[in-house]
Image (cartoon, helix red, strand yellow):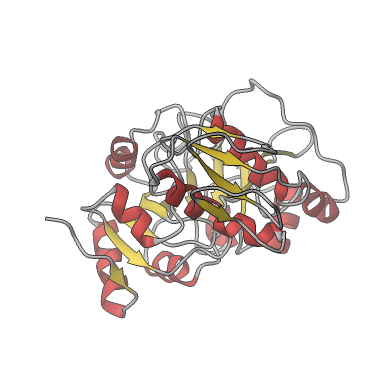
Length: 313
């Protein structure tokens, strides 16, 4: 029998914590997307995430902590991590660092690597749950692997009807966190997000290294195909073809049988927050394909275009 979405109450938070303590999964909101949370220290709990999402075992997970001090218990913090954590945590930034020798995080979660991706989320519900537990959580997006990331509780329930989900409303950012690898000679962005290359460079006072295509997967979001709807996407269109839905941006003169404008005013942050919800709605239309208008490729537009490119692969 399908479980109801759980609206935010003290009882819902307590139930979520009990479920996580038992080694089961919970759908919870973060400021980026809804996460599928499990005890990061439990192989059995982490295995349930991979099974439910049908996620490749070589694709590591991000460990979520209540604060920076908790994160430091598991990884070797360096000067770059100190600076970035101070500037952007809690918030939409994931750091990749070397694990401590006695890390304790499930080897499944790290895909057997000697590095760990870590984040301190800002969402108050995620914070309340983390602060009430004695362990960190892994929480990849609460959707089947390669499909659209969920930005509402209903998106999660559509994919996983039997999952306990707390409804925190629509995600305010709507894109996964920026991921920065701090284990090389220079920091490198592995996945773009709300925080841009310029944001990171300004804090660190140095130029970031270029991401090396084809390098080993250290973090989520690096697979060529990811964040994808069930129907094809056609990117950077100037004209529509037959039976196409339109994902538009800003003012335009195109007419489609089904259209969603990511931001009628051309605001990239609004577009990011609406991206996955818009793709999900167009995916459920009777159209054969989604035509996507061009978006600027700077600032958070770089992250939006990254998701669209992977969705169209």
